[in-house]
Image (cartoon, rainbow, N blue to C red):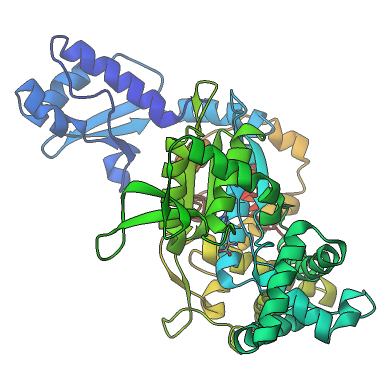
Length: 581
Ligand code: ARG
């Protein structure tokens, strides 16, 4: 569907060319925005200002000549010039009704992608033998939301969990477990991640203090890299214990992601380094293999290299990312790759992307692969400092999520809802998790945000509960009227009152918002859209009676489309809806 704004823009552009046939205009893009106030119409076009120089007359004269050339059409009801040359546009209710009816007739509300682009989304990606921290939580929530939006738009999405499951640190841990926890390695004793984290710390201590242990640990790394059976087995046990913990979080948050950790690329590392070397990109610096890239320097202004092989021959984070990128393009045929990590890794990815470009990894069969680092800010505690779970870093993320559920339960009980104990717990569970996700997604991801149960669980303002409640309200209204859905769904829409037309226009923007997110990767746009939708619905409900009036069924139809978009939108954010509350 061509968006409403696009149609308006096409109409106005035609008129402009007709009004000034001989002029060469700066560029074909008109600025058409939603009006900020009802008396400025539905849309506003401020481009007359921009053309003033090129056309050699005042913006007001331009606007007048321009609008005279606007042909009669079925989209625009009225235009008006305000101030020095702002054009205010009122659209025709019939045109909105027609587009809305067409949109509602489609199961998916949006048109599918013409070309099923393959997009890899690298998100979540915790590190084995370490707790997932709030940064991974952000990556998980934002990455999942983007994946849902791309899937909905018809892209072919591959969700990858680039788990940190390889590296020299595993030598220490395996050596330590062999010495102190043999039953864990033999599978006789079950354990969990919190124990593993402690053993990891202890192994690090021994490594730093005990030369004999250090040597054993180093031998263990070599054994692991050679793929010796018992080392490999120990490593698998360590990974399994860690993943059990991550899975618990994914289940709770309803996250789907395919594990493809760093170890997956291990067999490809040597070939990748050779390939980069053969392409003349690699220099040796202090014995290490490095790529020097223009435009990257350290604080002292010295060139900053991307190290792809250490002087001892070992590989690192960057080697793996180079190999992974190559694999994703050549084997997975990705045409776009998103990487979700905190902004702290921006430079790492900028260097990886540049190196990949120089190596020619981004040109595939005439297509240029698009790479996006999708950075996000920190989660802050109430003190404005980097968020730490209550008992410091060891407190598991799962407790943080559970605490939101407990708090939601308390708040719902306080509100004295007419729900069975079971329904109340279910609602609290959904609300707690929705609140955590929404608090994260509704902020522009680039910014830091303050984690507050109190704020995220509010029922008013731009919160999950506000949206959930708006949806419940529509559903109960539909039930209350006892009209069979097949009746109101077959009743033609009518957008008679201003509040109805406002709501209708807003509903039409759904696809435009999703497409915009597919470019700028900002899920907060969808939150804001849904928040405004709920507000516009409330205004409609305040101004237009639904039950027992002659417009009842047409209005129920409008309510139904609103509920559909609210539900779809919330699901794209990874939230769950509740039918009664
Ligand atoms: N494991 C890394 C971390 O915790 C994130 C990995 C992101 N993805 C990537 N391809 N480097 O910081």
